[in-house]
Amino acid sequence: MAMELEHFTLNRGTRLQGHGHNTLHICMVQSGDFVEVIGGVEKNCGRGAVRISPSNTIHDLFVGSEGVAGTIIEFSDRLTHGLATLPKSLLFYTDDNLRRVSESIVAAWEAEDKFMAEDAALELAARAVNSKLDKAVPHWLGEFKEELRSDTCRVYSLAVSAERVNRHRSHLARSFRTWYGRSPGAYLRAYRLSLAKQILRTTEQPIAQVALEFGFTDQAHFSKAFRHEFGTTPLSYRKLTHQV
Image (cartoon, rainbow, N blue to C red; front, side, top):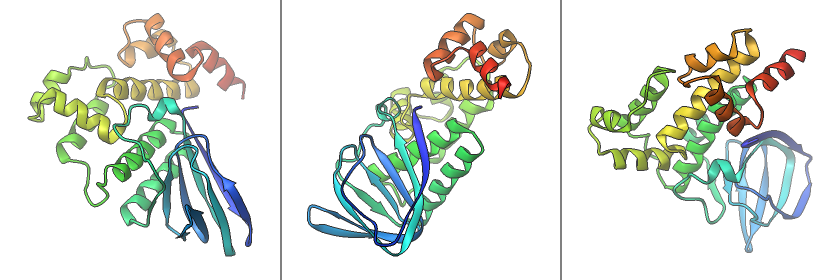
């Protein structure tokens, strides 16, 4: 999996010393509070707090008198390698907008829309690292993202899209990667594969037809891309999910 999401609860008085994670992760606090100590500095994390931690950051954690409940999101290296900048130290936020984004991540995950959950999580990390918490995604970049998602089989052209939003294509590609952690082409391919995966899971539509519907030249091209993204073929995935 490119991203894992896990809800957690810790009882009051719990102490986790020498605690850390092997990957970049986000902790979102839903209730209660805890104190983290790193480098001798204490930081309180209460309800609504969002903490972003780089990989292998060791810290001590002490749960308050009410206990604590929240959600941990862990990213794979494959998912984060496209981000222009990664955090170098723990980042703590109580920003309302970030909290709304974190809630949308959980909602998308629970609706089994893993692509949208990853998309929102990458945006959250990018916004935090690039100190753009008080800014919205540039309107032209948001429009471009929606354009990518508006047609599932149209041939994509970065040059044409850049001209449409009145930006140089290198600036458009660089900005997109900064905010969303992927190149526009990689984002579009992953989005289409995510939609195709839902169709395979919920319908009996022929795989060759699904491939064409989502812009792939043929079933072989689709199967190769699907295996690269999800680690299995469309046929194997369909058989597995239809057995459940």
